[in-house]
Image (cartoon, rainbow over all chains, first blue to last red; front, side):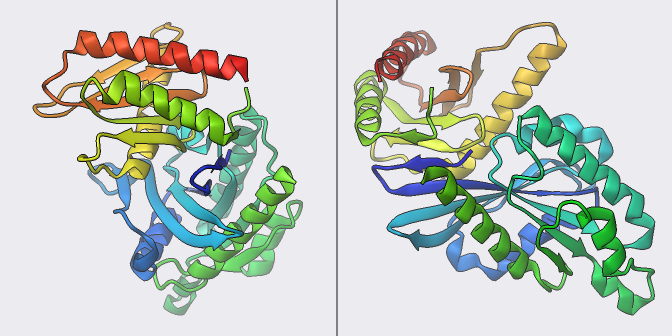
Length: 201
Length: 132
């Protein structure tokens, strides 16, 4: 849940990047950290294993400037993607305001994407939140691998697999090169801010 | 309790309590956060400069982890956490199911004295919520 400090006019918003392991969630945040370093006052926090996999979460505070006199402090989090870490994944989801689901567009990852999205649905439900109501953006990551001859699922298939019922905004992306990473971020921030405004008014 | 929006008046009173009960006895920095990692308020002694936003995210994660561990060993909760360092110590205490009080303090205060004051602080804050 967002927290609003009326005295200092600060709104804190929690946005979580969710998705299967090795899908590019941390890479998204790393790109944002490099690209928007003027809006980021502190260092990115990464809790990872020795093998560089996310163990608990990454955290990146992002200052978006003011909306109607209120300073927007966006807190970006990732979850650990590995299947065995669902307990910690659930902890990170607590109080989430907006979600980016980072799917891996490689053909061999098709089933893992679907399984991860289903688990997101379940995890949100345990916090009495609905995947159909929370601001959500889908990102089909790694489309750049197409140029290297690696089989990539066509966007139409990904849309059908993941976005058939949800019908939320989606982007093809390459977190490594930054393709559509800022667009994804902008979209989820605007959806989340609109949702929070609606809740308050 | 609705803490999603805290009134200016409530925040000012909470800040007063934190200053009176904790900053004045020599605590370097006090933060109240929610379990999602948002900062409700932060007070310091004017000389310490911590990155409170990252701190809040990590503290919420830390507390949630310990809570999950408590459940694994059959405890309802570990309501108190304490980390001891050479120059800086951190004390965590649950205010209620949603809020956490974190105090950072140096060598000059004893843990016992701090704990007494934390308990009093939490009682005061709870009274404030109950009244509003």
